[in-house]
Amino acid sequence: MGYRIEQQVVQFGAFIRQWRMVLNLTAKQVSDRAGIGRDTLRRLENGDPAVGLGTTMQVLRALGQLDALVAAIDPLNSDIGRARAHLIHRRRTATTARHRRPATTPAKAPPAPLADTDSSSLASSSTPTGEQSHPGAPRPPSDRP
Image (cartoon, rainbow, N blue to C red; front, top):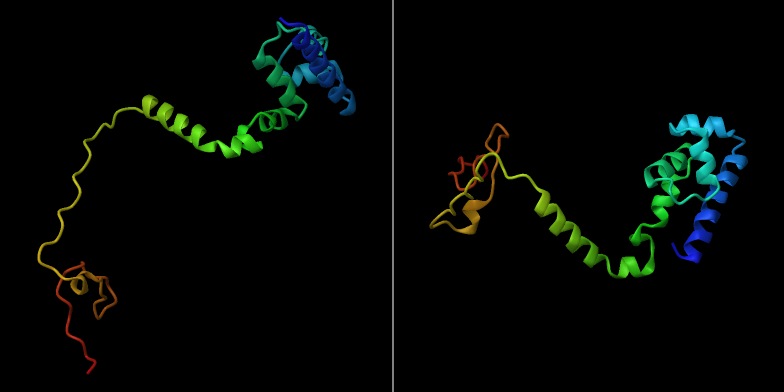
């Protein structure tokens, strides 16, 4: 691991410890909330890069900071991410299509178009009882002159 990364891991661990202190929580309280041992929390706070991402996220959740971290790396929260959002959408669509399950029932064919009708006969109308009639069905006689 490069020198700069090691520095940032140590700084990240220090920030986790500072959040714990600001919230006036003990190591035992945070480790219990995160479902980890105190030794693991101590390693994380000391900047041990071997502590897993999942464990780190559990601790951040216990400190109420997980949402802030996730929002910080959301590309749509940056100018360049918003400017290139079409690239994200395209990739997400391709990934979604690959992981979609096949349909269990065959798709229905679209209804056949109505033949020899003009646009006025396609308008939906109400019957005298207020019910909607089928488009293209003959309209009931009107009592109006």
